[in-house]
Amino acid sequence: MPRVDAILDEPALAGSPALRAIKRRFVQEALAELRGRAQKGEAAAAPTAAAVAEQVARRLDGLLVPRPRALINATGVLLHTNLGRAVLSRETAAAMVAAAGACELEFEVESGSRGSRLVWLRPLLAALLGAEDVHVVNNGGAALLLACTALGLPGGVVLSRGQMVEIGDGFRVAEMATAGGAPLWEIGSTNRTHVAEYAAALKGELAGQRAPASAILWAHLSNFQQAGFVHQPGLPELAVVGRERGAPVIADLGSGSLGGLPGGEPTVQEYLAQGADLVTFSGDKLLGGPQAGLLAGSAALVQRCRRHPMARALRPDKTTVAGIHATAIAYATGAEGSLPLRRMIGWSEGQLRERALALARALGWDAGCVRASEATVGGGSLPGDVLPSVAIAVPTAEVTRTARALRRAGVVGRVHAGELWIDLRSVLPEDDTALVAALRGVAGAGSSPTAD
Image 1 (spheres, rainbow, N blue to C red):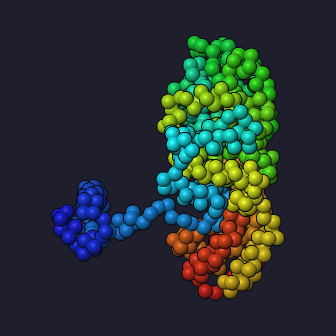
Image 2: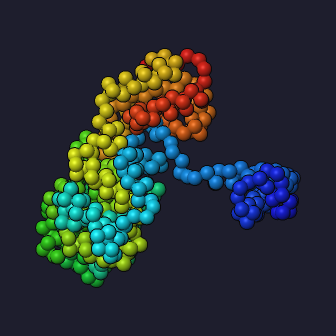
Image 3: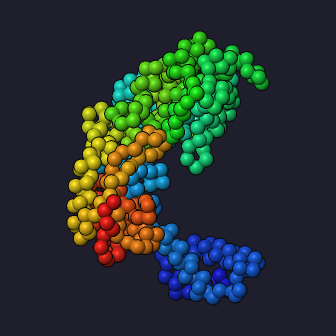
């Protein structure tokens, strides 16, 4: 193997702006990988210093570009988890940029004394949600974790087996709820759970219980549906049982809808009105703001969560506070229609078709490339519901290669029925110019595909 210093002195790497210590580390990692391959018989000859330098330089070039980079989401999934979920409004983004410097995060301008980072946000959110109080943490999972830890000890939380939801990347609601040490008491079956089983857990009558459970956890089936011979007690029933035993009902809504959406998604306000003592949900997803977690409900319970030691570890940063506040202002002033997610959901199929035809003309493609499509909200919200949409089929015989080239150009589409589709339901009109430029750069010449 070539020497480390020899590789560092190669022109391909010597010209990199990275510090020499950084380059040395990556050279050492590259050599270790090559040695491992050689020991397995996967490398026939030792590489040259120049070859290793070029490999490391390419890797550094990618790492020295600020990430994540902006992309155009043309998949038709409006809340695409892998693409950052909710697109933020200009007002929200501007508020986050304004807070990026020195700001009044925990400082009272009038008195010059220490303040709270949520002093302006809490009353606005509470009024908006119809809650006594609200607390904000860094994501939806953190809201669930904090609530179950602060309110579920010492006896633990009760959760129906029919609500033991698994979300993205293998994370499960039950595991997140108990990660802070609160025991979990599973009741019922996959398809049917009865109110008497909740009551038994709150009395400490389940097998293995040494003490009564301290709280009830209700988890919204945000990413799947149950049908057939199924039964779950409603929140009003659980509220009665919880009050009898002095156990709060924690309702994990997940998506955080405030209403005005298709599909009948339950709202935070509805859960509180139905008797939930505390509702946890995401600040992005259906709310349309930056990633955050919210806890809304009883002032006493929110205060218990706020004063728990875990709350400090889960608190949001200044830009998130600013972004959530700007998003809340949009709802409080009746301007939620300006949020990108609401705009995307609200477009008619006719409006999308007009855009698609205009884009096809701008690209010099035949109108036959316009396709009827179906989009989804995504982000674990509105399971099974689709929105009529319109897509453009990219004229190419090399779908995989063109899709890769388009991704490198900053546009992510989807492959459907052997074609590369650009679904306009998830693309903002202000991105159409950049979309056309990217498509011109990668799409092959030739006629458009014929219409369906």
